[in-house]
Each structure stands twice: as structure tokens, then as C-alpha cells.
Image (cartoon, rainbow, N blue to C red; front, side, top):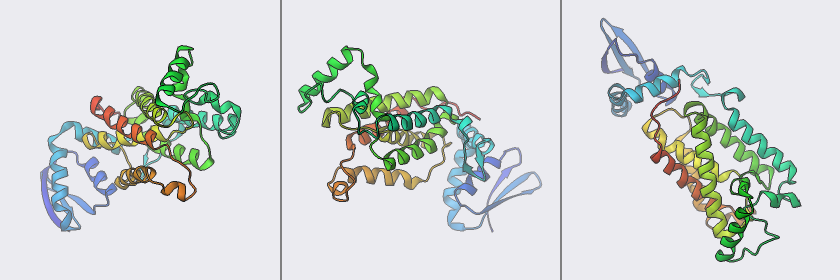
Length: 286
């Protein structure tokens, strides 16, 4: 063990210690008289740990966020393990998506057109101007739900299962820590941006929660940098961005995965980041 820092005993380091453990940093905190001493197993961790500790000590908002995570009843063994009662809205969205998958025959029967941005059988949508006209006429007739409903249209079990797992893992954390109102705002905003961009680029033949999932990921990534409270591997963001870039190439179709809703992914991701900037978190639920 390497002695790296001496801190007054009046400072509660329990949350910081748990955070270090979750990051895989071997350490120990001992008491020597009126001081606590932080020890590290690996001296290479000294510089980044001291930087993190300095922020923890100097920023009350950050300290409260870290401590609230360590006290959260939905963390078990340092892992995020929510129950349905912790994220009822997210669970409701997933259940609705599953019901719509059954109702539309996984996008293969006539009812699928009810969830598209416009009815592709009723309007011409081969040009941008025709898409604008079709959407205007659709909204004027009162079918406003179509701005959001493509989220619940899936075309394969792989598609819906992946989206549901990601939505549950990240969305449940937003609902718990940032509240239901923030989750609803994020869901609606990312849906409008991702669905709108995809529609104007390619037309109404798309669907899925992927745009929302990318929006939630973008929001979590940027918001987490200011107020740490979410749990997800950093590599998840890298993987998602790389996969989004690959989607703009012919590779998915070559592999038999079909054409991806690339614009929805991009729009959702940008919308999530924008919301994290415009609506920064000021308080963290304990």
C-alpha cells in the first residue's frame, strides 16, 4: 500500500471510497488520530485519484451526488440493480413496445401504418416536398400521435430486445436520479428530433426505440461528466458511436442486417446531448 493523502476526519469519505471500488481502484482508508489516510495499491493511480479527490472535496454538488449513489437502495454490491418499482415509466414504455410488436405483427400487417409518421399508402413520399406535404396534412387531420408512435414500431425480436435492455438499463437510472419529469421530457424531445430527421431523409418506413436509446445515452454521457450518478461502462458510448458511423456505410446490409435508421440514431444522440446542456441537473435524488 502507498500512502497518498491525509484528510481530516470530519470529511465523510464513504461515498468516495465506494466510487473508487466501483472503478476497480484498490485502496484502503485508515484513521490516525484526527486524520484519515488514503492508501492505494497501485502508485500509478495516485495522480488521477488525487484529482478526483480534490473535486470531491471542493465541489459540494459533486460530493452530494457521489454520496447519494452510495446510499441508493437500488445499488447492490456497487452495481445498478433496479426493480420495476424504481422505474415504472420505463417499464411502461417497454411493455407498450412489446404490445405494439404483437399488434402490428412485428411491423408486417396493415396496423403498422397506424404507427408510422404518415400513412405510406395514402401519400406520396418519394421527395422531400411530398414528405413535408404528407406530414402537414397528417398533423392537420389531428393524427399528432404519429410524431411519437414510430418509437413503438419494431421489425424483429432482436431489434426490440436490444432496445428494451438498453432503455431499461439507462432509462431506469434517469427516472430514479433525475425524476419522471426529466425522463418524459427527454423521451418526447429525442423522439421528435430522431423521428423527424429520419422521416425527412428517408420517408415513413422506419421504426424503433433506437433514436430514444441514443438520446438517453448522449444525455447520460454528457450529464454524467458534470454530476456523476449514472452507472455505465465508458466503452458503451464508444461502441454506440462507432456502430452509428458503421450504419452510414454499406456494411450492415452486406451482413444481412438491413438498412439502419441512421438519421434517427444521429438525431437522438444530438438531441440527448443538447438537453443535457440546456437542462443541467441541479439536484440529485438520494
